[in-house]
Image (cartoon, rainbow, N blue to C red):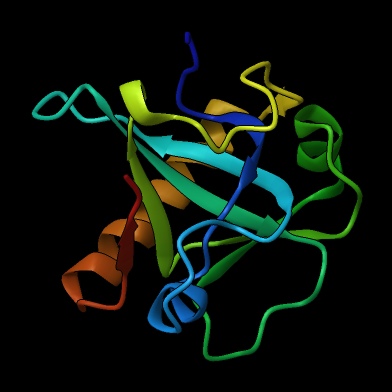
Length: 132
C-alpha cells in the first residue's frame, strides 16, 4: 500500500464514542485523510475522519474549502475532524474500502491542519483510537 500524507481514502472509521461502547470496527466507509506518518513509527498510519455534517462547536475541526473538496474528491461543504483519529499498522489495514485515494489535500492545507493538530495535542485534546 502506497499512500502519502494528504491522501483521502474510504475507510471504516471507528469513532471514539463507538470504541468506548465496545465496538471494534466502523459502521460505514467514510472519507479519511492520512495527515501524519511519523519517522519514529513508519509502519503506523494516522487517519483523521472527514464529515459532511457540521461538527459540534466543541470539536476541533478544519473547514474544507470548496477547492480543497474538489481536490480531495469530497462534497462541499466538508469538515476534517482533528480531535480524534484512528491509528493503524499498515500490515493490519483491513478496514479500507479501497487503498486507492479518492483525492488529496494540498500541501498548504495540510500545513494548516498540522498546526491545529499540534496545538490540540499540546492541550491534550486529541484522542487516538488504536485499531488492530
